[in-house]
Image 1 (cartoon, one colour):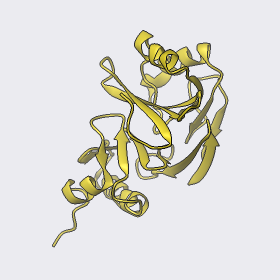
Image 2 (image 1 turned 90 degrees about the horizontal axis):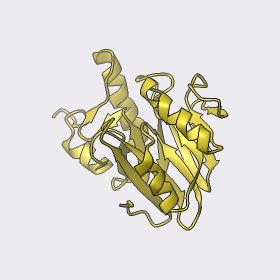
Image 3 (image 1 turned 30 degrees about the horizontal axis):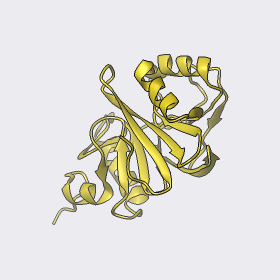
Length: 197
């Protein structure tokens, strides 16, 4: 089922094997597709691409993980694509565009704003596309991804407030782990962002 977004076609694919969600993003009416955090490429996943007549032109990585290796290697046997990530050290022979700080990248007819999340890792990024924010495993609904210590957690919370909470409250957050959420829901319900009175 596609997510509601006027100008984009966004298809979440949940993998029971990895218990993560990969997002397939394309311009409505277009055939070029961008994948956010592919983890498990199987027959069902490829069937979705064929069903919508989509060709993968870009793969975006929010946080490089070893379990993405198989998906990247499988995809490069089928598609000619470029990887966008915070590091060039990835298990793939496809060209890698290594991000360096906050920047906007144009790929697959989509304008992608890459936001660094330095407290989590120097190679971690969140991607903002129109009214959507793809957070990967860095931020989940009501919680955060793993951090090394309380100081790193506090820095991650501060980064979320500084970068994401400046966006409209209705912005939809799409993590790779767990259900979608909105910025407004996180601001009002998450214990990490509520101000102490």
